[in-house]
Length: 175
Image (cartoon, rainbow, N blue to C red):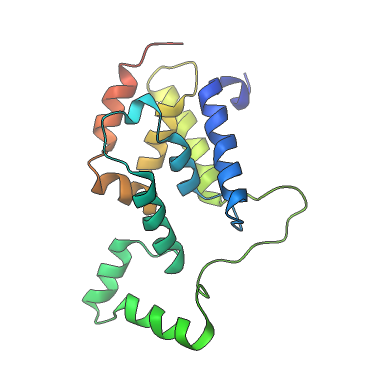
């Protein structure tokens, strides 16, 4: 069975919505943050406080900082480097948003970031490890939480943990 055939209708729709959201804001690539935003209404995330506007602001800040997470910025601060001060200085000299990755040349549609592709691969592993014969939104959320990037950081800051989502996914009704 091919991977695409294992995706539930909801999971396919989430991937399509992520692409549409990235296109709507003229992003250079479809990043994992768009995938999370597309999953906010997924039952596996029910009960968590995940305001879309707050998440979008966190993701804009992340992009502005060239992809540095808060953990990265803290590590640099420990070395005496104030990331916000450096970015402000660079933007004053070279223009606002200069550190954001620019659009890549593409022939058809927006390219998927490597992390997006890796998330989809890892979601398949999550489904398999749980003994599920389908790939649903809960498996995608688990894969997002496995990553070390901004999406996992943002979710963890809001109490969404791998352990909790794994419990919810394990108890999900087989499809």
